[in-house]
Structure formats: structure tokens, C-alpha cells
Image (cartoon, rainbow, N blue to C red; front, top):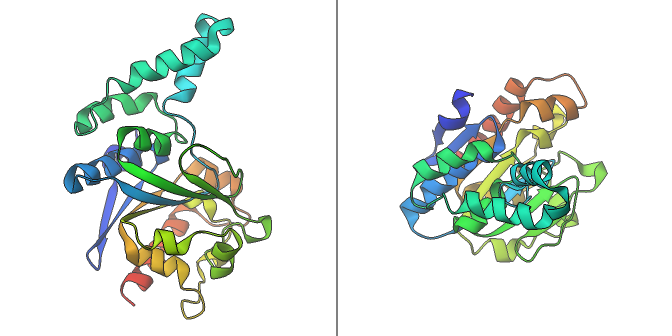
Length: 239
């Protein structure tokens, strides 16, 4: 297990904490720590190639159910998901840590909703515009994959006025960025991403190396991508 999961890289830039994990679901521990400190749920804006909003412990429960009795899949999946959820006490991060090994890297958002860490989420991604009872999804046009420009945020109709009134967590997966030019953001012409960065109480970043390596469209490394994102965040925060 990577040290960047249970021991995330932490930077403080201009008083704003930025946490970097290797596998995306481990941000749940960071969000839980923030909830424990602040005592109220936050609103999440997540920027990712994938939607990452599968139900809590869904894959683990599905595989277990199919191994036992495929004809009772729906019943057993719900039962096994509930079995995992009742082992977690939202304010006891040790209980989260013990359960997180059964979680996939696309289940953290709705797990955080179920635990009360989040009150709402806005999921910006390149794959699916799901419609669930809670949370909102925004599908990035193919021509704008990897973009942080104002035009992208306007095209997906992100409700900036609504979000602007919230206590925010900004969450970013590096697999969203396909090219190095994605970080060449003219901050005089593009202010929406910068406003989200400044508003965020904390910023969480997932490296997701295997997905990044598969999706990138030019030769650049996960290390370079991480450095470029941190550089852009520093430029915004210290501007």
C-alpha cells in the first residue's frame, strides 16, 4: 500500500491545505477529518475523467453476492453494503480506515454522502451525466477534455452562484488532464477555476497513475502532471 494513501502528501500554500493521495477513495479519510474538525458537512466539487459516484462498497458487495447466489443479487448486494456501512462510525476515523480496503476508487463520494461528510456534490467528468436522487453530474464536451477554462465550466452549466455560497472541498483527479497545455491557464481570461480554488476550504488531489498513464494523449509523467497542477494552484493562491 502506498504511503500516499494512509499518509498523504500535504502541502500548505498561502494557508490552504492541499492533500495528495495515490488512490482516489483514500480522500474519504481526509474529508472525514475535516468533518470531525468542522462539525458540519461540506459541498464537494470534483473534477475527474470518471464520475466516481458508485454506491458505497458496491463492487465488493456485488462480487460477494454473485459468488454466493446470483439469483439473489439485488437482495444480497444491499445486505452486504449495509453490513460494511454499520461498521463505520463517522467520527471514528479508525473505523473508516478499517473499512476502506473493501472500497473501490469510484465509491468515495457517495460513501461520504452516506456518512454525512458531504451535504451535496458537483461531479465534473468526461464519461457520464448520471441522475441520482442527490448530487449533480456535469459532462465535459469531448473537445474540452482536460480543460480548466471558463468556457468549459460555462458549457457544462456549473451553477456557480449556488456553489459560491457553500463551504467547499475542491477535489481533482490527475487523470482528467490529458495534455500539458491543460495547465497553461490564462488567469486574466479564466477566473472560474481560480475562484473555486480560492473558495475551497481544502483541496484533495488523486494521482490515479494507472488511469493517467492510459488516458494521457502525449508523453508526460504523473510526476510532471502533479507538479504542474501544484504550480498552477500556487500561482492562483498567491496571486
